[in-house]
Every structure is written in C-alpha cells, then in structure tokens.
Length: 196
Image (cartoon, rainbow, N blue to C red; front, side, top):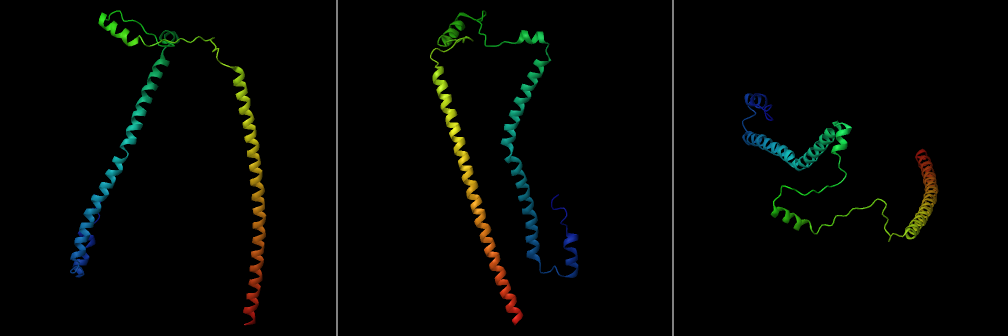
C-alpha cells in the first residue's frame, strides 16, 4: 500500500506520550486528508498515463498484426517447392466468367463491367508522341542549372569563410586591446595599493 509506512506508532505515539500532541488536532486532520488525497491523485495519474497511450498501442498493434500476417504468408509461400511456386504464381489479374452463375447475375456483372476498358500494354510499344529531343534539352537545362547552383554555393562558402576570418581577426585585436587595458589598470591599482 502506498501509505502503509505511515502508521500511528512510528509517527504519533512518541508525540502523544511526551504530551506534545495535545494541540495538534488541525495538523492531524490535514495530515490524514493529505494521505488520502495524495493516494487518490497518484492512482488517477497512473490511470491517466496508462489510458493516454491506448491509441498509439492500437495503431502499432494493427500494424504489427498486418506485418505478422504478411510475414506468415511469405513464409508459407517460400516453404513451397519451386515447382509449386511456378504453378501458384500469376503475374496479373485474370477475370473468368462464372459458369455457375444465373442469368440475372451474369447480366448484373456485364452491366457493371461494360464501362471498364481493359488496357494491355505491349513491352516494345513506344509512345509516338514522346519527343526525345525535348527530353534531352530538358536534361541539359537541368544540368546547367545544377552547375550554376554549385558555383553559387561555392561562392557563398568562400564569402562566409572570408567574413568569418575577418571577424576572427577583429575579435583577436579587440581581445588584445582589452587585455592590455586590464593589465594597465591592474598595474595602476597595484601601484596605488602599495603607495597607501
């Protein structure tokens, strides 16, 4: 218990036997109220801390569940032999007509899929509208812009180095002047104290 170490024998019995506890009724009431209120506040803070992380735990739990499901599917697929993998592998989506469907279901399917155009790209198909010259010119422009940016970055770097070097030299001069003044003032004070 969080207030188990606060007992009457250790804290108040000696005060009561010596007679110093007679005027402390308000202090005892405040002490008892503090022990109760602190325990309630501490338990509420712990509950709030535990409840505050539930959304993060839920999000990570769903991600971890999906990850473990994918890993198990990949593990099962990899445990198959190469022959079974070749049989099970399908590189694209294959839509087959259902022979067991009723006439109404087939009509519904056709009405839903009539507006969908199946696009099959050819591997050697080249877009006739594609202009290689404009692409080449665009790439050359980008390379020129990149080289100009590199040059401007180098210029800015050299400017920064020059400014920092000049600031550093000016700072060193000021530090020397201040040290010289301090030494001169220190020698004057030493001379003034020795004369007294």
